[in-house]
Amino acid sequence: MQNTIVEQNSPPTHLKPRASLAWVGKGFLLVLALLVIYMVGRNLLQNPSLFANIILSGLQMGFVYALIALGYTMVYGIVKLINFAHGDVFMVGAFVSYYMVYRFDFQNWPQNVFPGMSPILVAVIGTISIIVISMIVCVFLATTIERVAYKPLRDAPRIAALITAIGVSFFLEFFGALNFVFTPRFIPYKRPFEVVAWYIDTTGFHSIIEGTKIPSTAITFSNIFLIIMVVSILVQIFLQFLVKKTKMGVAMRAVSFDKPTARLMGINVDQVISFTFAVGAAFAGLGGVLYAIAYSSINTQMGILPGLKAFVAAVLGGIGSIPGAFVGALIMGQAEALTMGFISTPMRDAVAFTILIFVLLIRPTGIFGEPEKEKA
Image 1 (cartoon, helix red, strand yellow):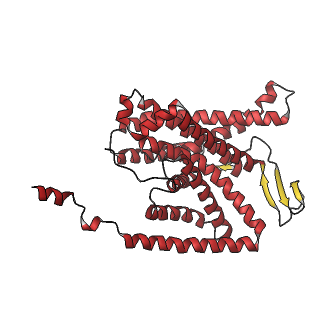
Image 2 (cartoon, helix red, strand yellow; image 1 turned 120 degrees about the horizontal axis):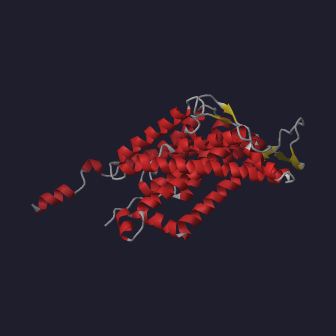
Image 3 (cartoon, one colour; image 1 turned 90 degrees about the horizontal axis):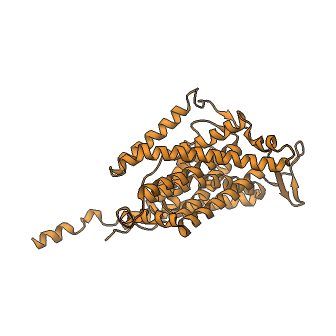
């Protein structure tokens, strides 16, 4: 009997690590990395200003993806659920801000209340108000989805919750496409403030004036890029503080590690999970508004690809890791921008998911992820 138990517990021969296959994958990845470095280096030497502009474009996309990826990684870290409806919450945030600007002219409310206020202050307060309202709507939507669709399946097999998340995603997309809700068409987005752009060249730092020619060697950027960069970095810092330094953050880490034990310690697990969904949705709504401001066009399908790419970014950085999601999003943004700039625009989506395949083959836990340890 003892020999039988030992024999049953010993790992089958065909399940042992396939070192040769892993080395083949790593070798292919090394060759691909060297090819990418060669192409990037060649283009950098040929046209440095174009390369710098593409890098800035990639940073802008990466910072937006980071706001979505943080929600994916937080929810997965707590409930081990890939919330595919997260990208559609991002879409709802963009549409809420659109209606606040287009229908209600809400960005000008400070001027209507205080007629003598400075135009710059009006734009700042009005834009922040629109963002806050969009975030609140997204928080309400996400917590409702969590209570109605996910909470009843918390003890069900993971595949049930995953299928439900996909179903919720489709519902939001096609319900939003109805004419009495949003619209199935692409809509031009009216920005709540004026865009100001600058360029840098050998002669120094200059404002871009409409009608003037920009030197071919100039590096250009706008106030939109600066806003997205600053907001995304502040969100990253806030989340690190929330998770590491607050009582709720301690509860989130405890629930992530062991839910039954967390309940025994007096932690309200349901409240922590709802709070996690709410925080992730708030930043998805923020990302939706910034994305609409940056690219000035929205539609009800706009959350699909950014949501999937943000998910890839979370996996790349190590899903469950907040710094990993941020770094992975910046890598995804650069990969997409460099692909559009030097290879082909339609290839940008293929490159994003090729990265996912390589990460799963070579390092499934991601850059900052650690192998999952069995609990005693």
